[in-house]
Length: 129
Ligand code: 5GP
Image 1 (cartoon, rainbow, N blue to C red):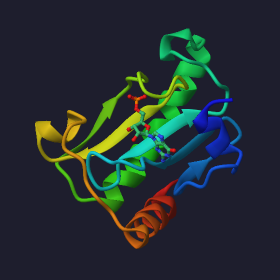
Image 2 (tube, rainbow, N blue to C red):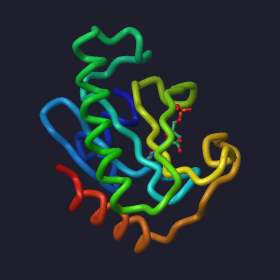
Image 3 (cartoon, rainbow, N blue to C red):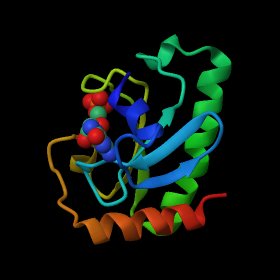
């Protein structure tokens, strides 16, 4: 079972942003920038292009809705999107409120308090539709 499946099942706590039958979105615990969110299919698949076309399209549609909520909650130049998966072998889309190229480089990290994570997750969740 992947660490993200444990998060989805509530075995490991997370700052949840959105959920439906097939997808789960939550704040990255070591964010590049405030609001850095991960969108994960509940089906545990390692690599994004091993998803079927339908699963891939549904993941992108769900990510679009999360990105729209993020844009409302976190002022930024744009939402950057990235899929890597070298650390956690369970498909996840990184949605990152971006103001500079460095925000997309996974080297500059932001430290947030628990209260800041909670407030961000609540705000993004309230803007999700
Ligand atoms: P990747 O696999 O795309 O290289 O990155 C995995 C991402 O998952 C990283 O940005 C890392 O901070 C995040 N991550 C790893 N473990 C956890 C966790 O237990 N909780 C949360 N919220 N994020 C995690």
